[in-house]
Length: 460
Image 1 (cartoon, one colour):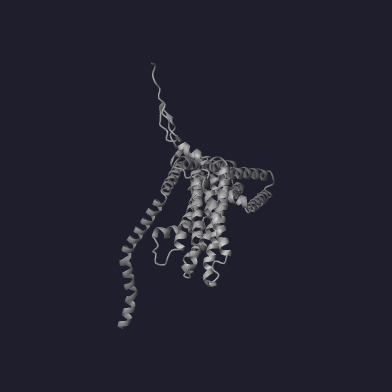
Image 2 (cartoon, rainbow, N blue to C red):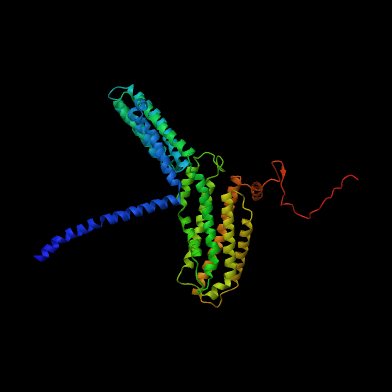
């Protein structure tokens, strides 16, 4: 009897304990969500500004419902302005312009064709009119859906093609039961254009976020991460077992991992950047596709760096006396490649032509050539084969990294030529004050060579 009472009391006791702990769990959950929201805003404050911009745009187009004269002019179709803002407003200007133009052109062309199809069908008999409308819907929907499979159309115009199918079908289907199809099309097109125009204006003129600028910085940052790894790799791989590893060096060796998954982000931002107008240092028809080429080569180099990192953290390490024989040349290749990558990253970020990257690449190629010659001389002739393989593999991967760095440098030079980057001397001269400003002669520190004093005597 007592056991039965305990079993009956068990579920109630568990429910009471859950209910009693509910306020504390809710409080901890709220604190967790608040801390995540704070971190999200601190990582990129533009997210907060974007949220406020979306709220402002929706509030403005909502006046079509709040203001009676506007509501009487558009009626229920005013809701399409609100829907357009919600669907079209994206984080960057390029994404917003792409969606806005796609939606506007698709709505206009589909509305025009829908009204035309409805008019043509109305000239036929009452029995054949729905057949003609159904046939036109079938043909256009099937054709446009097939067009969406083309890679170039899929990349830039997929959203517009989808809106085209939706608008054309709505006009054709609703127009069969409603004689005022032209009025409906006019209101829907007007509200879509108003919502799209409001979105584009707010997105461009209030704290704009340019996808091209983010892409530009992402490519430069990825090169810097690879350079940071190579800068610390030599000292870490040839570090003695008793030496301790610093936290800063460990974090720099892990930064390259984000480069491996950057392909989708780069492709999206290139697509968005092509929609953006000229802004800042980026001219019209900027060579955005060249960034994809640099990004592809950067990831190829990052995959080789991933292999180096695996050997760096492997439990099976070659003895130090075997590694030390190639330490100087491997460290030389790693450091020179690091300098070259960081120089290329700086050149991209500042939009200047790289000046010293080729010299660092030449030094790394010389070190790689010397390393190949050293290995061919039978460097580890008396050593155990199993002990040689890891170190020889690391040396081979470093040689591949040098080749990848050279290819990246060629792509960056090509970008500098296509985008008309300034030379380093011109960029430095543009930042220096001119010797003569506002009627005053400023002393110049760029005078080289011996100094002469000229003494001018007055008249005797």
